[in-house]
Amino acid sequence: MNTLTAVPDARTDVALWLDLRRTAHETTHPVHDVLPPASGTRRSANGTAVVGPVHSLTGYRRAMRDLLAGTTPTTPAHAVEYSLPAVDALVDARLDLIGGCEAKAMRSRAAIAGAHLLYDALQRDLRSPQWQRAMDDGVPAPTLLWTTHSGVGPDRGAEYAARCLFTGTAVALTPGALRTFTEDTVVTGPTPLDLAEAHRVIRALDWFGIRLDELDSPAA
Image 1 (cartoon, rainbow, N blue to C red):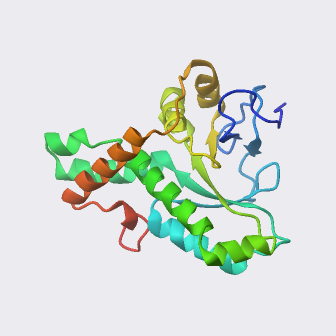
Image 2: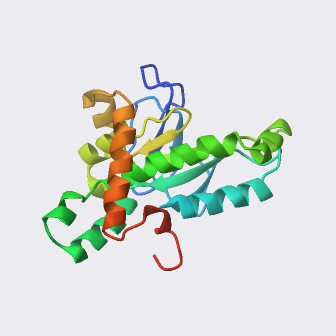
Image 3: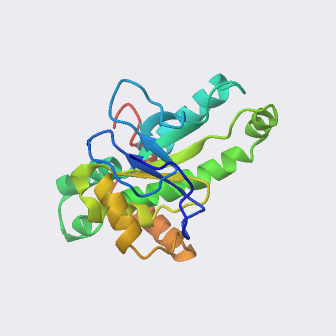
């Protein structure tokens, strides 16, 4: 059985969730919340409503507009899901079509760069007059939920998590990735160098004609 409790280590700025949507395996490691096996509901075990997944700023902004318009003090807390492997898969497919050593060197870098964009947007949105008024009225502040899936393997899932420890957000891991993350991963959290690298990746992808903020557009 899963234990829903605070994670008793240095990762306390980020909520660790267990993602059981694609697997029946569980874990005894303490987590903050659980995404239960697919059952037609988009609620976590603790009642948080999950929106998305989104893959870009476009999808994130659409989700936040909908939440601002439709959330009341009596509705549950919301988490906007950002699927890290899905973003890398979308961008890597375009890079593979472009071909060449330069394009190959940019593979598997888009998701983390996009996570920095979304986190920066969330921070700015929650400081906006519109969200400040809503939160003053009792509307719960939404958060970002970084997710991986079993297809990328536990090591890659743990690597994604280690690079998305943004304060006040949540990261959902499969049982294998959670075990690797909590037992084997040295965690430092995002640094100014990580942010600088994210912006370098964004500029490089833009040079290839790939704009991360358009991955959720109708043409994506």
